[in-house]
Image (cartoon, rainbow, N blue to C red; front, side, top):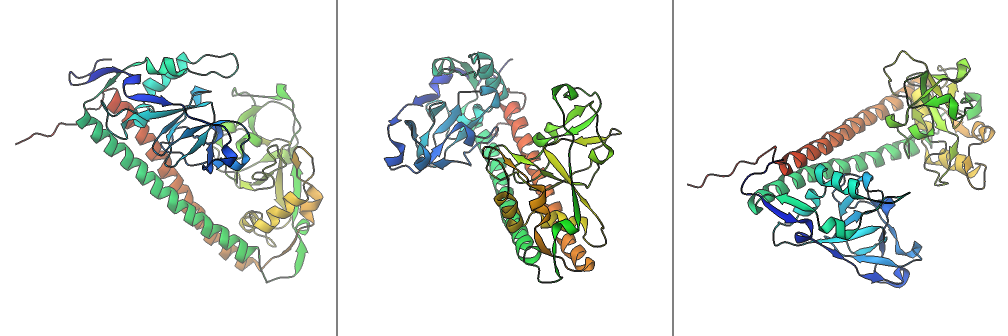
Length: 401
């Protein structure tokens, strides 16, 4: 790869230094926030999640505002983010401070998300079970960087994209709160209709039992939906789809618009158990089978209970809390079908159900579009970082008069 003559070759250690300050007892320290590997997200420029030092029992590392947290374990996940606060972090995170002799502020975290740099980090990582990279290896990397004037333009462009992403995410959070309020206050506290049990309206059909020989990643057999397809708090994960070549019953086939709920929650966090998803459109001529980890909620009569109204009804906090409260299992939470059927609800007339459902469907359409825009911004950010730092995209130099 060739670079313009104005670019400079330096060691990574010339633009970044490792900080290593030990905090012996985080619970009694002045710091409230703890960042572990589980809090770092692939492709995110800033740290968006954290835990509490009250839950930490072992020694930690100190980091300060504007330090970069780099996950040195499982480097293939490509987790590197800037902390916008002081705190402590896991020993599997390298705390990095920019050296501003050769670079401008904000450039280092962008460079560390450059695909060529990430690939070299992954290739150099070592370990039998959980590959790690050492600081010595990082600091000895030869890298090419543009002049500071060009760096500043790259920083302005990439961080502006990030700011736009943040604005959309903040709007999504507000809209999701409004949606939850509508569900809880209008559907969850419905005053109309007589009190009935949810089991009067639905059947709960458990998915197919299977073993490892029944499914695979290759396109053999029918589509197979299991727990890996369910996102935390609802939503569908396309990457979780497998292929199934085992036996199944006709009732264990699902179609677009069918409602599924997870039967188990191995994390015991209750973010997944019983929380509904509605199967999106999947372009296929294959049948779609669902696993024993999931159940299909089938309506007895859509003239009594609208499908979409049921979907939003199952998202009510009171109903979800009831499901979790009466779940079975000491180590893994299990859905109790009979408990779900005993949930007492009031259902308004069909016309009112449809009116409420249409409102919430429009909210979901807006949220889907907003999330799609975030994905587009993330893809644009990545393409520009790779283009700018490989010198495939050159930022024009301003002509001085």
